[in-house]
Length: 240
Image (tube, rainbow, N blue to C red):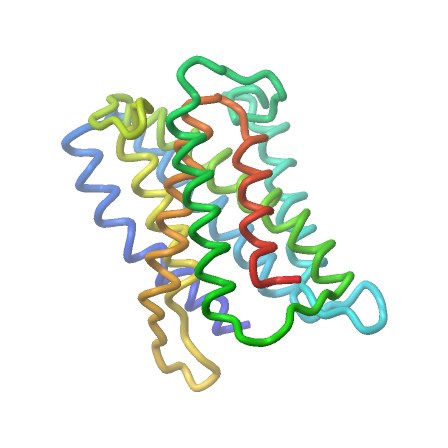
């Protein structure tokens, strides 16, 4: 439990100075959005970790409980925080399809590259586990996309109102960068059971880049649906 708190605060403390500096250069006076975003991140992250050892069924191998409660917290926030509508968080099936081909193509190429690298690096025959497939194909992408690319990205976009860059014909600003870095940190830096700091550079870079692609999908389509689907498909590579 203490490890989870330390991990969450460490990850947040790394990205916070960059967020504060970015706000001074490209933001408005609504500093409260940073606080709200931080509270959402902390509450969902701790719910995921604290409930990871609470099984729902015999032989459970994956964190269904923690992810489900975190998802419930995120949805409760979306439907009770009246400053924005669920559609503004990306909870809609209506998508903007204008000039989506460039970012869709990049995502497709990245997926094929991930598959190729996996099969080149894996020398054992593939095995399949029902719970693993069901878990990786559903709740991780659903929960993480709603939290990171739904709530956090939307809140920070209302703080950093100017788009400074373009990727694959998708305008983006500090919100996409900050949420992508934070997403990478949650997968790449943590304290072990002895409270020794562990940093997995490859995991950080890979998930930060994937988080950026998910953000670009949301920024372009204005819907979380493509990102959720792409996220869960990527999770199935090597997890089946």
